[in-house]
Length: 368
Ligand code: 13P
Ligand code: SF4
Image (cartoon, rainbow, N blue to C red; front, side, top):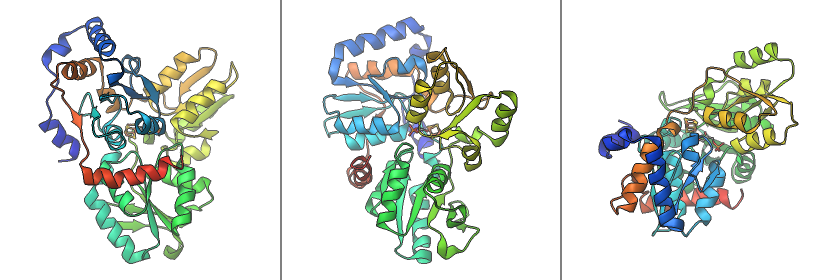
């Protein structure tokens, strides 16, 4: 049973009445509580949230912006995080002890974060230490559990987000000869490749078979990629890029670096969520874009830029299912429970984990 299955079975589920309320009633409840609580309540929202939810966000951002805001936002007593579990954990780590963080639906996890468990990471580390001795510094994408961030913090490493991965890899190479990059192999590979590390100097750690996969000379390996991926971004394929190129002569292809290396290589541009939003906003009117990222965001960008021809790189894409778990009924339930003094779905990271994970996050935030 993974952490989300455990949480799911041990957490209260949405009371039936919220599913029976219509949208107007839910919106009225959310608005009323927001107005009543004022600055005591804070709602950060990730760009992948659905429109009905992001509309209520006090601030919307990518993972980096939301982590930065959490670290500097000390007014709110209750923070209701509209995003996924690891983001709420990060917020709990970076906020004060008197601030409480809630996730409207405990099932809003992240399949990528689940791909690296603490036990797997400890085993991998001891095998890699035997192999390469003390030459490795760990980096973890923020899309990982607090336990993994703590492991990384304790071993001198740092977190990264898709918008500062290059900067953080450069920093890591000033610390040690080699990097272990968790849990997204694609972000790690794309970033290291951009920095000039050849593919033959990258190996993959397979946590299920507990083996190191590599093609070149083992002693020359500089980046060890954890065999994890985003189940949303892996759905953009080389065939999708070829199809767009064959169908439209003037289409620019822009993708998130959680996409596979081959897809990034064929694209015109690749970058974080913010990079994608800014690039399209600054593009000339009439330009055409095929975007390879999460569908709630792509649909929003399409609506915001009616003067541009914008499509999803994969016409059959769906939104991130776990991000989509946060909806009006869950948000209304969460706020009602806080207003009534019986809050549900609090996210807490234990003190020792938070201390070590905080080190990894702070190493990133001071350089971001
Ligand atoms: P960023 O917000 O860093 O672009 O990450 C994308 C993502 O997959 C969040 O879950
Ligand atoms: Fe996780 Fe991918 Fe969804 Fe982001 S988009 S929350 S990485 S599954």
